Each structure stands twice: as structure tokens, then as C-alpha cells.
Length: 246
Image 1 (cartoon, rainbow, N blue to C red):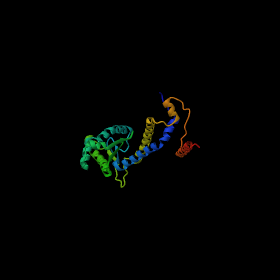
Image 2: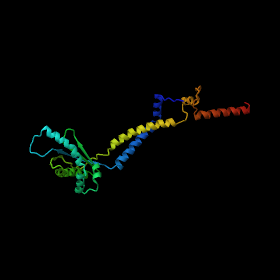
Image 3: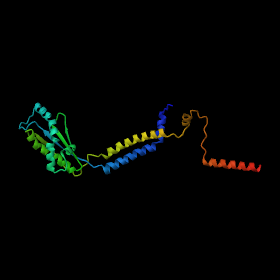
Image 4: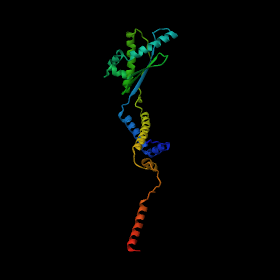
């Protein structure tokens, strides 16, 4: 038998299960907040910017062709920055307990379109260490690029700096709780419809009609317990009078 659900039925289910849906969303928000504040390790980020030129020159003015050539070098430099040739020396200089492959996962190299500027960002649970790694990468790059490419064209625009009260880059508890609230609402609505679908109890006249396939021709109104006691008392008095022949 094909079962159809009207828009009114959908709102009726949502209204009936509103407490359950809201409780699910609140539970998701609370769990997300607890996990974000108590269990997730804060990650700090330090960034530095460098400028890449094709060659070191005393000439002040740079023409468009030189800039275009410099831009073509950017992709090569982004690969060199995250290469073992650079990261191995960074690990040695800072005496880090890690490997170039693991350190590479903490580094993000970004370039801007039509720009010779490269931004190097380092994520680490310790703020001071992220600053040290970012600045050491640039220092090692300046040294090694002279050996690898026989040029001296790396200039520091803005080094990474220490902050007294750094703010973690992640996790973002407010963002996590917002996502959890939306997810909790969606899960709550889904669970509400699933529970309603699996609930086979008869609650309305329509349920009876759909179950039996017959129309409802009469309804017995609910009788309160007080009325039931009154009826019992009345029937008792009638029965006693009948026995006494009154």
C-alpha cells in the first residue's frame, strides 16, 4: 500500500519531536566544545614572507621581462623550500626530533599570482618552535640557493615574530560548535522521521483507517478517572437497589 506524507504531517512530526531534535543539537554542541577545548591540541602558526629576484644587481629599475622570468622561478623555489636539502639543515640547526617528511607536513608555501613574493607558514603545537622553523627555513634557503643555483636572490620581507599571547590557528572551537549544531539538527530531524516511521502504535483516526482499511464512524471520548469513579458509584447504587427490590 502506497503511503503518502503531507507537508502538514512533516510539521506535525517536527513539532512532536522538537524536544528530541533540540536536545540532539545541544548534545552535539556540548561534545564539540568539550573535545575542542579539552582534547584537541592547539596548533600555532608562524609566517614569513620572502622576495625572489632573478639575480642580484645594483640596477634599481627592473623591466617587465625580468619580472616575468622571476615569476617563472617561483614554482622552482616552492619545491626547493620543502625539499630535504633545506629541511634536513633546518632540523640540524634547530636540533629537532623529526624527519624532513614529517616537517614538510607542517609547512605551507603560498605564492600570489603575478608576484615574486612567497609566504612560508609553519604550524606547530609550540608557538616559539613555529617561529624558529619559519625563520630558519629562510636562512637556510638563502645559503643553499647560492650553492644550488649560484644566485643570491632571496630577500626577507617580513620575518616570523614571537607573540606574547599567541592565538592558536586551530582548532576553532566556535566554528566547530557551529558545525556541530547544524549537524546535530540534521541528525535530530533524520532520527525524528526514522522514529516516527518505525513507530507502529495507533494514535489518530487516520492511523486506524490506514491500518484497517475502513472509515471511522464513531469516536469514544476520553473518560477521566473522576468520571470513571462516578460511573462506578452510580452503577453500584443501581445494583444495590435492584437487589433490595426498590
